[in-house]
Length: 176
Image (cartoon, rainbow, N blue to C red):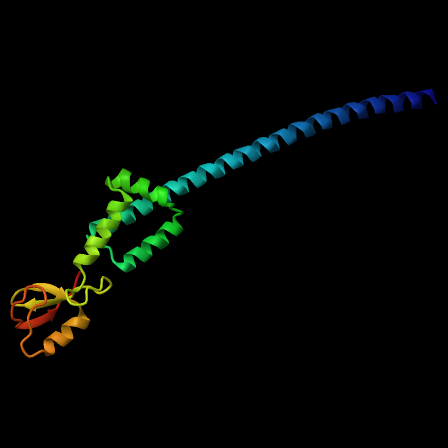
């Protein structure tokens, strides 16, 4: 009996040590899990930052294209708004990109857009959404939209709405 009792005590001690070791291992594993969680969070932030940089670069190149075209149409403005939403570009970030990449303020950008759309507006109806796409011959004034060119073609002795010269012919032009 004494032998059995002694074995039980020894087993209990061994069991206690095993339990302590298991608890220590459990604490270590929990710490490792917490550290890995922090590592994952850091990686997610890094990915988010890189995606933000990519979106910013994409938006900047889109602006470069708008400015290179020398005219910003109403459709361009709608696409710009969609691009701002898609790329999560705030008005402040828009201003920062304009100043950093193009040395231009938002006011300058808006002024450029208005001036360019006004340059492209028809000389008769002045509608900025209608593009001048008809050329008056012989004066070579590009000054009419399709809607205003047709009635002018039907007039008996039409004069160019831009320079006042006699109209010989009105031709549609195509932008490439």
